[in-house]
Image 1 (cartoon, one colour):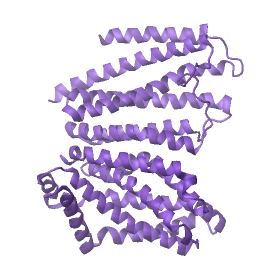
Image 2 (cartoon, rainbow over the protein chains, first blue to last red; image 1 turned 90 degrees about the horizontal axis):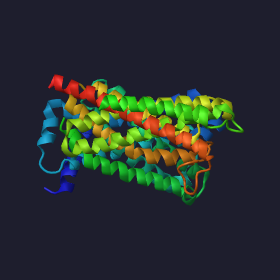
Image 3 (tube, helix red, strand yellow; image 1 turned 120 degrees about the vertical axis):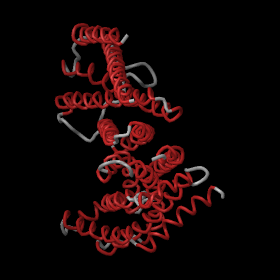
Image 4 (cartoon, rainbow over the protein chains, first blue to last red; image 1 turned 135 degrees about the vertical axis):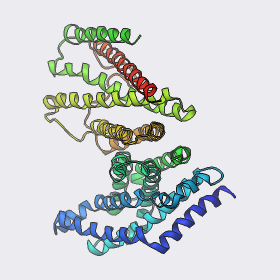
Length: 225
Length: 215
């Protein structure tokens, strides 16, 4: 079996399970909706203030949904000794990491598209012209975000107080991604060209490469249990 | 050996104090307040050194799973967190009279604080795993991710904003500092580095004893 095929099988299995149970996605979509309400309550009805805070709020929504969604990545493997099954799988274990990462990217992509749509609906912002550049920024941010999240989810899967430790480890590492993504989103929503935030995009790309590389190289060590 | 290191650090710290308070002159614009630099800069240096050691020891551990490498990483992270805390505290005390505020979201202040939070998380992870071997593996991965994240944190926060004075010693060209003050600073940097080595050696020693006891 080739490397890509092994990653694909892990992804397919997770998509199938999610497709039948709809556990994570259903709850996550509802959670995202609730977040929008909370932002509205927290910042009041002031349109201007809300619009100014929009890039930050958008990413806060992604991060908070990600904390819940990504943290669950390996929980299904703990049932029915699936973890041992993963350990026994032949070949390079990093294929499992890439499969899980792809699954998380898919999940985050769906949630993010939804949050974005709800934002335009509830907060009455027009994203139409900015959509391609916005998609690039969100894609770059989400890749790094999911890469660290998948790795840390594997790390905390066996730890006491998992729900607490995952965000505590995850959030500080996320700071550069968050800063870069928020600044770039701000510029894009203002209608600036991507060239004006090229340094931030390069930082996001560098972060993506570093996180995915570290994940691929060290996942083996975490999977041992 | 460890005791010798202890005496050496005590001696060099006294030398550092004498250099900082006796030999170095009072700075013209900031007055005596500037002498906090002799604590602030060495502790900041030790903090980064400590986390550099965590990074190297983590890779070393994953390479050949030597218990010693893990003990070194553990000890260095603990000492590093203490020194990072000292750096932030001393910087805060220095910031009040010179910048007029205890805290500001300046670039280097923020990145050191993120460093602090990251490695407190590292120690938390260690504390939450009972199995030593597993704690060692997980922390090695976290140590590597954290260290690789530091340059990203540095640049992102720097572009975000900065208020700090630009580096005066480690930069291209000659240092913009009077030779006496520079000498006093370097004496303190050396003293704190030896102190760091002493703390780590002491802590590795206890960790090894613990390891032997539980084995």
